[in-house]
Structures are given as C-alpha cells and as structure tokens.
Length: 454
Image (cartoon, rainbow, N blue to C red):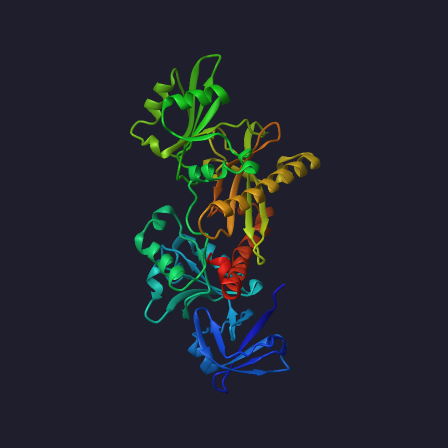
C-alpha cells in the first residue's frame, strides 16, 4: 500500500520543501514536480510531521498547486520529488451552467471526483477548450462539497478518457488533443475509444483459451449466412457493429414446424414481434432502407431464464492501484416482456445474483464461471487492443448447459446496474478503482516509462 502525505502550504521560506525523513531515500532532491510542471527547490527534513510534506507558498504558486487538503502520493526519480498524481478526465459536452457544467452527466462526474481523498489523487474534468498550450496549463473543473470550481493547473500526470460517444471520439480536434498530450508530453491516456463488436470478436477468436466463449459472429454479407445460422441455431441476432445501449438489435427466429420466420425488435419505445413466411419478406419489410453492411450476425444462445424471461449478466472489471485486474461488480439483467434485450429502457430489470439463483451452490458455480471468464478476457483484450485499458463492462450469457458466452465488451460501460440498492457499494468500488489505476500509471510513467510507452 503506497503511503499518502498531507500537503501543507507555508507562508514563509523561499522555494523550500519540508519532507519527512522517510522520503530522503539516499536521493539528492533538487526539484519538486506537480503534474507536468517542476521547479527547483531546497529540501529540508522535518521530524515532527511524519505524514506531511510542507511547501513554501512561492513554490506552490510556481507549480500552480491548488490547496485542496487532499492527501497525495509522493514518488522520487532523477533528483525530483513528484507529488500527486494530477488526473485529467477528458470529455466533451460542456455547458455554460455553473451548477451543471457537463449537462446530464454532471452528477456522474461529481460522484467520480468525490472519491479523491480515499484514492490520494487530484482529479479534474477538462475539454479541448480548457487547454492553454503556450502556458502548459488547463482551466480544470474541480468538484467539492460546495460545488464546482475552476483552477488553473499544469497538464496532468495521466488522462482518463471519458468522451461520451463515438461521434465525439471521431472529431479531429479531440483526436489531436489526445495525440499531442501522448506524443509531446508522454502523458499516459487510458481507456481510449469505444470497442467495435466485430473487431473484438476477430481479435479474440485467435486466442485458444478465449474462443470457446465467443458465439459464432460474422459481418452481414448475404441472406444465405442468416439461413445457414438459423438452421444451425434456431435463432440469430442482427446487431449494429458500433451499436450501444441495445439500440438496433433484432432477433430472427425460424420455426421449423411451421416454416415461418419471426423478428423481435424495439421500435418507437415498443417491443414488437412480427411474423413472415420467408426470410426475404422479413428482411424487405423490417430492414428497408438500412445499410446492412454495418450489421453483424450472431449465433443465438438458449439462455437461462427467470420467470420465463431470458437472463444475461453484467460483470465489471477494473485495474487496481497495482495494475492488476479485479472483478468490481456482478449483476443479472432480466429481459422485459417481449424484449429482444435486457436493457432497462426496453423493460429490463436489474437483479442481484442472489435474487435469480434460488440455490446457493448454483449461484456460486455461475459466479465462479462468469468471473473466471471476465478476468481471462480482460487480460486477452489488453494483449490484443491498442491503448491502455483500465476498465471493461462485460455482457455474458449462460446457456442451459452452464456454458458462458460473451455477448459484448464495453470500454466505457454504462452504470444502470448501480441503481439497484444492493449494488451501490459496487458503484463506489468501480469509481474508486478507475482513479486508483491512475495512481499506478502515474508512478509507472515516472519510474518505469519504458513499460508504459513501449
């Protein structure tokens, strides 16, 4: 467990830092760094305050250090003492309203930043418009009990990507910010980008230990692939390759006895089920005018059910302060009546695993399988995807034989499961670890940069 130090600011003394003896690690310290700013300083040992680092006021001002009374970590390298980390959370969609500076997502960010004292980091929100490239500073948004405040601070030690959607991710000016901070300032940037369903499938299917979790999946090329998969599996799903929130998902079912085809989907906030006498008729009526090249076809799975409704499972994984993958949340999602997905907006219901498994041994067996799969696939995605991944939200299915199936991996998982009263503690844990990982990254980028920027 890394030690945290209370940072105090002293009016007297010029460019001086008072440090406890334990930080005098046979290293001759000459500089103090905060974020990407550093300044020459005189270091003096103090014996009375073992858990404090005291800065002279002029040094705090030179480093744009905000006096926030947050205990911080201290790292030493190359005659420099680094205090922090300073964690920039990059997003878009800012408003001009002081009480809701990030619109509908303001509450989420307020809750994310509220764990700063337990983590020992200084997190802030920023967008492209808040950066002063000439000064190397950012007008960062900070959250306190009194509300939101803006401070001018240096560029951060690490950046946590919280862009809200693929549209913002594709904007050239936002891409330019990421590239410049990474390449020119060597700032680690974690959780970049949204996963593409087909890309994830193709990268994982070459890993022998992972491929057994993957339902057969193809990009749409012709009706014949749907016909063949319907013959093999009885039902298939058509999904947008870059979809999210369950939007645009269609289930196609073939009834061998009657020779009819059924399509289940959501349209204008209603769950629909339509019957057709041929696949061509179904495709012509349901998918008229759609670009099917952006869809994938996925094997249907005969899922476990609860009260006659299919269940799938959301498992969150996060990297912790030691850079290790941890299971941070588990929940069951029950499909709404007639719904093609388990999403809450389609009538789905969130349950704990205790609520869906009557027998304790069944629950333990399911949990064991799901968590093992989540940890294995987290490591596999880390090996196979670009960028630094710090959190993943998985949607898994369990079939009636107890096999685990991966439906989706989300690099920016939704948080609807945490509305369940018994899952709120996991909400706190996922927020805490998403910032704890920043501490690990910051230290690694300072002391072992070759491992981060290889």
